[in-house]
Image (cartoon, rainbow, N blue to C red; front, side, top):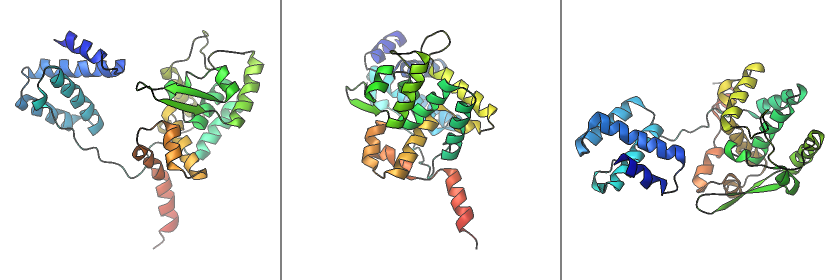
Length: 267
């Protein structure tokens, strides 16, 4: 049954990691609770709520619900738990720390990493999207990304980044192909980027919690709205399905809130 469930998921255009997560969840449920009934499903939900964050709980429940769809037990589907929206952005690198990191990487001769950081912060690219950028895209100034639903999102490379990246590529003698390669000449991995960023955080005395790939995508969004207050355009640039997702960037980061409170509250 599990094998057939896995095949069923594979036909629904889900990412491999998502399929693996759902299959693991169902295996865990069946091995620990046995029979699929309302009582056992609610017991499993209770276990999840007590031990995991709401996002993780809902991911597990989504896997269970997919299995219930597959086995034609839709009436047993479990309701998701409510995720409380925070009124601030967490763990976003500050503009000052971003500029400091970039400057240090350049000064110390880590040119490839200087451009990794700059490309993420200046394009809003997800780290997986960053790996698709080629020399040819730098030349034309953009990269078209295609989602599973057939939608196209254009990732723009700003003029100042294009100009400096072109000189960097010329110095390296690279005229085509992917920008970011490892020492073996293969595309660097998302994990490799994340690990190296933590190394640089330690090296330069930055908070490790804010130096990770997606933090620079957040920085792009914050900086964009600070300079050009158009939420609908930012939603398009970020590739958000709903403008509601983009609204989070109208909020202050926790550290920004603290600074404002410290400055304003003197009573």
